[in-house]
Length: 120
Length: 120
DNA sequence: TAAACACATGAACAAATATTCATATGTTTA
DNA sequence: TAAACATATGAATATTTGTTCATGTGTTTA
Image (tube, rainbow over all chains, first blue to last red; front, side):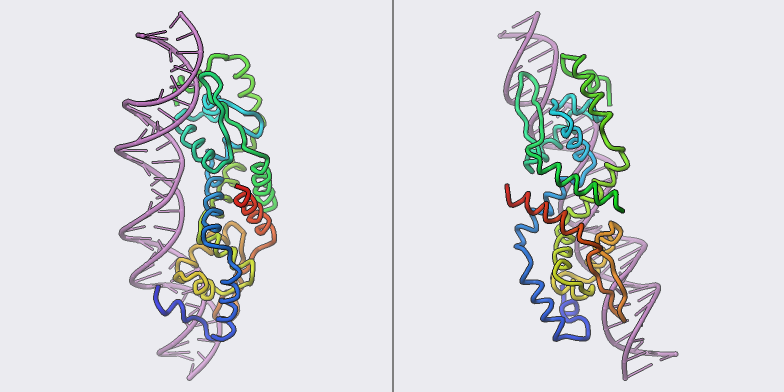
């Protein structure tokens, strides 16, 4: 970062005011960071596929792996990410752990994204 | 991928049926891929910050860089990603290029994400 | 038309992340 | 309680991705 970037554009006065006004309306860096992290969780094909499977039915890790034709370890690792983001939850049932969506909020977000895709 | 992952869990019949039923309801791989790619675009702090700035006002690249205290090249690279995802658009105005949101769909998606964050 | 300005872009480097492999943990069953 | 099963996890590897630097392209102005 050097002075060249800060001193930019010809019309200084109005731009500086605008920049300041916009800057003040920004949410906190923490919130923006968390938001980016949330989207990052959705931004992976494997995790999206896991979520779509869970839209239909709660399932054990093994069946998730089988449905998605991936090995169990990869699925477990991704389930951990989804769980940390509170998008899914797991409960033990005997030897298995059954995973399901945390709440319907996840559906809303994904539906919104799918809508955007289909309009493009 | 080996046979161990496919042959999983004790109760074969019901699980196999379930797995098949779920599998059939999945959207196409292409759509899932596009969806993950879309979320990936939102999943970066710099791009989220750019979008939030553009919520308030359309702006030239230079002012975006100034507002976010980043160099012009980094911003340009990220604007390219956002433009390819059709989340922002740019128009030339003299020496500058003014960027703005493509449509209000972007706001809806981000608002939904922010809601999720704040409920956690 | 040459210089200055604003932006775009390719290459290089660094950092983040997804999958695999090996193995550990927790649960049931023989 | 030992073996089998289901899942979790650390380490290693490969890939992806973000930023920087240098420079190219397009526009205006002196």
